[in-house]
Amino acid sequence: MMEVRGTPAALAFTVSCCMLLALLPVHIVANDNLRVAYQWKEIDFEFPSETERQEAIASKSYIAENVIPVGLEVYKKRLFLTLPRWKEGIPASLAYININETTTQSPRLHPYPSWSAHRRTSETEAPEIVSPFRIRADRCGRLWVLDTGVEELLGNTTVTSPTSLLVYDLHNDNLLRRYKFPADHLKENSFYANIAVEDNDCDDTYAYAADLGSPGLVVYSWKQQESWRVKHHYFHPDPLAGNYNITGINFQWDDGLFGIALKPQSDGYSTLYFHPLSSLNEFSVSTKVLRNQTYATESGNYHEFKILGSRGPNGQAGVAFVDQKTGVIFYALPNLNAITCWKTSNRAYTIKSLGRVYMSTVDMVFPNDVKVDDESNLWVLSDRLHQYMYESLNRNDVNFRVLTATVKDAIQNTACDTNIKPLPDIITNLGDILRPSTSTIAPKAGSSSAWPSPSHTNAIV
View 1: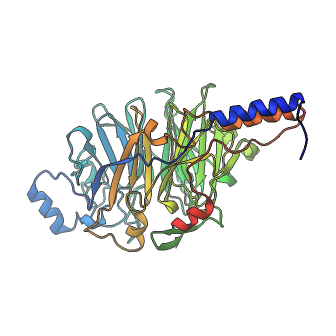
View 2 (view 1 turned 90 degrees about the vertical axis):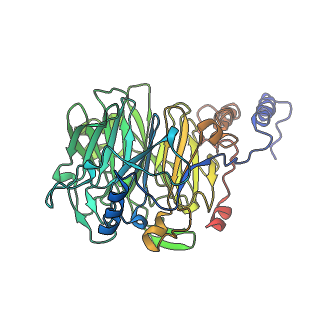
View 3 (view 1 turned 135 degrees about the vertical axis):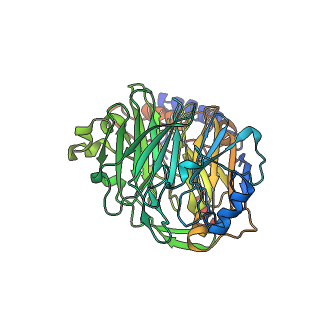
């Protein structure tokens, strides 16, 4: 052991260690503070009349067991759900409930923006909205709907219309714009399943759409009314991370780019955090790169994309969302039936720097969407998607849940708690004292986490 007693280095070491211990919480546990706000055994709708509802059932234009919520958004007092047409019998693929007026048990959904937007005017005409997966409400009062245009994905797959962005005015629910993706954005296996919106300037907004099937990222400029497609090696799945085992159902996916989340920066751009679904790693890139059409689409930008680190075994993540006030990013981890978080101010991205927000093999079976509203409430949708796809849902069970908590409560006593001093800064400063200034060391893990160890997480699933 190196003897440093009585030296300036020893004094600095002692003081720094005392500071480190003082800043550590006495006992860190995951609070699992989310509560179930809404739950359904099956999804039902507010039809214009009971007669029309019965006619829809008789004609099989409404088959309750085929309806599954996949995407979620909350704007003001409305909670929106996407209900993609994966099977037949989906009468409306985008709907909402009024938060202040709705029962928590199986509330019926209102089609958005209207019933007519989901109905064909003729056999050859597609409805206004076909089959959206993810949506995003921006701070300008617009709802961005990423519509895949694909019906019966799990049956007789039909491309009803090209993948499109539909943008609605949430003040009056009018359609502001429809933008169809150009043909060169739609590759053989393309499937656009997620969207992020950079809304620092309402007149110069950018939308980002993730293609998980033929890995790529589409950048759309509201002002220019045009888009371009970005490619990168980091968008592709990891062949070693394609195995999923959720509540005893084992399957393999090779999905590429999926999770995308934006954090505004002081230079007027944002950091885009991203990851393929079948991957354990997290990556980032500045939108300064992505918004430059010439630079974004050339191979010389390779090193602008950064790898941050790994979530560890079973750490495949679906959607992600950054809370703008705290800088905390939330992840949905389907393989672990869990929501986790990471402070974007943390220099380390490891298992220890991730915080466990909520984990449950009952309430959180396949978390499928995560959002934070403008009142700093976290919202999570769980929907048993794997069971819907590979077996069947039990109509007597609660299958779909929306859980919520304030961000403050959700991250309390986790590695993401903003009241806990970030350890990497302290450890790095300590390293600067004890090592020559010319040396560089990698920052160690962040504040203590309640996230289970790899051996524990492997035992859960």
